[in-house]
Image (tube, rainbow, N blue to C red; front, side, top):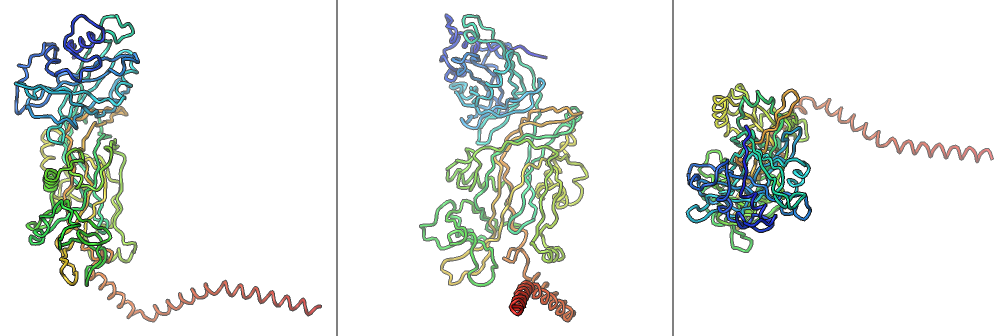
Length: 612
């Protein structure tokens, strides 16, 4: 049922300021409401048909933020007034927690078709002010930062101006929290002074209605396909529950609209020996180029045997790539498998950022921790039909690939074909060992138990569990050794590994598109943004500079070659000689043809001279 709501106070502000009335409802500038105190605005307003009373909005540590009013200010087709157009939101903040000034946003529909919203977009919010005194931080006022697209859209409708608002994101801790709004606001008419007749009384009114939204609890996972030496393909995914009733009503989940900020981490050094970690721990985040620090870490591309193995990446030592500052140094000396969980890595990133500052990445993380950060967020709509492939490993040699398969190395040779980006998990998918489930669904082994538990919870609640594989990237990892500068020789002394990965910050799902009988329905999503930072895993194979092939594999190859040659020496030699003769023949053939041509020419010339 539609509910009629008039935000009389704000409308009067527009009427009085722009129309020159005899009394002002509250003091405002002539162009905006940015600087009027939030309580002053609210105390003279009507919310849900009742005059605002702060006593109805107490503090509550368990309460959730709520949007009290969505206000359109000074809409006009007049060119001289168009610049005054603005949208304001008033928020009840029951916990009293401080809302930061940055990374607050509101999600509003920006595209429509046949009267229905078909696409949603986040718009930043600028904090105007908050309540103080006995109502400290209980109420907030924000201005929607319009990039011009909202004004342009509403100008196209000559009868009404519609705003479908699904949620509002508020930044308390560095990563925003999303709160459901689920309302449509339809404004029509003009405040006094804003219409064609500047002397006409205000005709401005607003009607609101409910807006269907879906709340998602999104959880991350990842899978690394061991299809390269030192480089693996990482599949980044999230999973969540969707009501079966929604799928029944609107059909197949066909598209997911999401956004994220892509970044690549700096080198992550993981040390598995306690004594070695002690040498380096006091130099985390410090440039040692001009310090008398006598220890180094390094990796190799070539074989590690022998003296002075060639350095590829080096910390405090020359190599193909050199760094003199370690942002990541993680102690895993007490770990059985040297794996750094996602939670551990995120805690480290927060610790480093708090300790060293320089929070230039996503407004919360130190720039030291990343070598690359996209300038803008990635905003994509991924269709369920856009399947993807991942190539398996190859040495470039069929023989070496065959030997690797026979001896059972951990390398993956098979291509992953026709993988679905949007997949509804079935109960049968969760049969077998965790390792089997991991490979089947392309999720981390460490996440399988959590996925099983969430599947059971969703199933009991009448929800389908959706796996959304949204991105692939390279994960680089290699064994790492330590060196003391006072040693006369540098031999390989392994102390762990070095890794680098792609992360997706402030990942958020914006809306879902369902298809039923060729009819598309877009439902906006309310979900908390999250940082998708996968755990760090050690190298799956021992990289010794031989293209990923262990030394004993080469022994087998040489031995088998010798056996074959011993038993089939004569035919092999005959075949090789035949091939050699053929090559010589092909090489000599052009010269023979040229020689024959000149010989023929000389004979013809002599014959002509003899006739004379």
